[in-house]
Length: 375
Image (cartoon, rainbow, N blue to C red; front, side, top):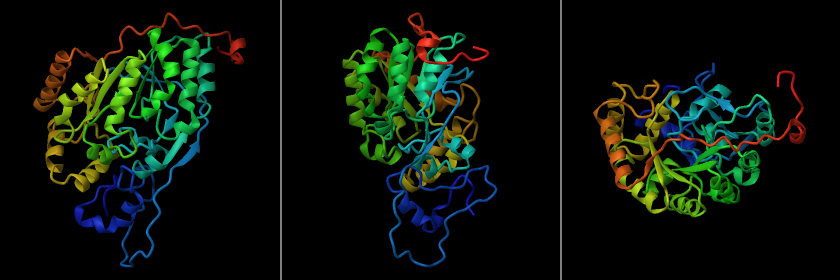
């Protein structure tokens, strides 16, 4: 039986053919049970041919009713201390997404469940209004999409992210966004006035110029040329744009680093950042499975370079090491990035000097909120 991460040898591929047919158009190839489950199920070929082609997996939304919407963190290797995630799980299906293991805490698989069972929080704008209205609240940069994409396909219908932006704009609260979707341009009418006040910036996750690689690695994201067009549209509206070349995958998209930065610069990006591939928990198995299936000729080299940055392991979670790695290869990538940034006159991504002086919370009465015992 393959490990619970979902990894299997290539000789076991036939046993999983039905599940792979269902996964067409998705990122993960399997749907192994979460690591906390007492029972583990896997597809099994009992010798009977399948007469009917399996239906492709459809996206299911699951209503979530949180009590608060701002999540705080104390991580020393990121430049913000609070995030808002209106969605958990992501239809984009990026095989490398570091948020995948979170689905295991809900009794679901970090594989295909992560892409097809999406938790949604329609109450997010109302909760945000209430939290910003508290007398004890102190403003600081809110990162929208610390885990999963705020502009994944279901946002077009649900408009939860737009509702959040409307509240932030009303309160003159600083925010930063990161997305792989061109849908962010829908909200330029909100973002441009905020940017004019120095309150917002947008990072576009930009991983490859290779359409085939993008389609395989990030199956439901905007195509590379649409991300570049999005950068241009945002920049033309006066919104600061960051090209986030993340993740960089050794020997896969890492050779494109300079080309990515050049293209982003030509399309209006003024800032840049990068993160190396992270493989915590189930992601290591899911990514290895995907790599063996789609790029078997490079699989050994990719994983060898990954382990060279993590003392022989697939991944280490220590602060500052988890995002960049260590050793000669990690140092080389860092040097290349900073050299390109200097040559293109880009700014290495930092969020210092966040403007909070414009923050203007309405009174609790105006906000329609009821004063709590400890407000």
